Image (cartoon, rainbow, N blue to C red):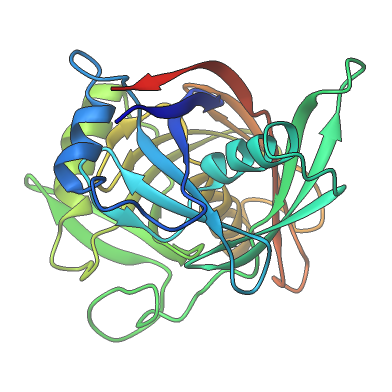
Length: 280
């Protein structure tokens, strides 16, 4: 059986996009996802994105991490799916509504001079800030939460953008981000594990961020992680709501705007189609 795929990347976060308009195929189990994402023996990707039919909207995005686990939402992935739906599946709506397990997300399409998609602005929705819903174990607030890893204590801020994040305003190098991130992500403090952001302020409304993603490891970029960082920055007085916040990641910059009433977080960035092929 041959299966067509398209390879996309959003600010260096790369995905294999498969059309599954009749639902997730039986052959695409956890082992198959791992094989596809393997960078030596497969196509190579941070995850597999399935484009399915939606119930609350025309399209549904399913996110399968490189380890075969399923995520609720992916800010970079949904931009890639939006471009695929526009250019390959032919939906020419200016704003695409794409359903995810974290809700329906509006994706505003920005076209370049060539008529192709140049960027996508995604309404990630309101952040979840209740500690038990993020979730973070124990009682108390979602801010200034202490967690230890490898003998070092960190203070961070919990935010869910449909998936759990823990934002630490401290700059670390890539080695430490991977080392501490892997331990923090699986800490008992996070019952569903967590994506860990190490955010270093570098100017007004401007942060440099390293992300350790649950199920993926240290990644070049994380859209929902950038959103969580922007929300945490606003909540702790490190940035202002209602104005663009620049988040620099190893894969490139993303622009975020947090609504003053926290009703929405808008993420804008590129979505690039890299190549297409056939899985045999």
